[in-house]
Length: 68
Image 1 (cartoon, rainbow, N blue to C red):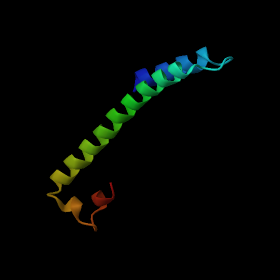
Image 2 (cartoon, rainbow, N blue to C red):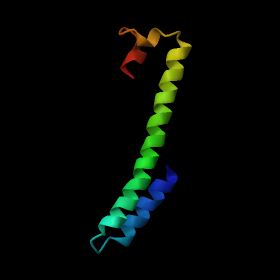
Image 3 (tube, rainbow, N blue to C red):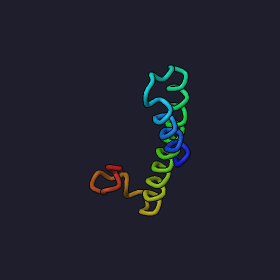
Image 4 (cartoon, one colour):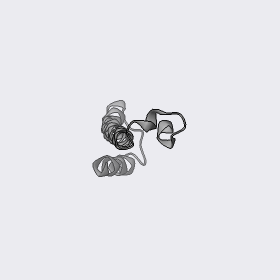
């Protein structure tokens, strides 16, 4: 995550006064998408563990975990 943020800062500083190339923009998006994937997978894993800990009650619509 920190690496993606650092690359974004560098990209903005480098292209402040000029139009970025399509390849440069795609390279930046690749790093961003990888960071987003890691964060999303982590969130899913945490919710799954929480559902397991409550004995599957998180699948019931009355349980707050069902909205996560």
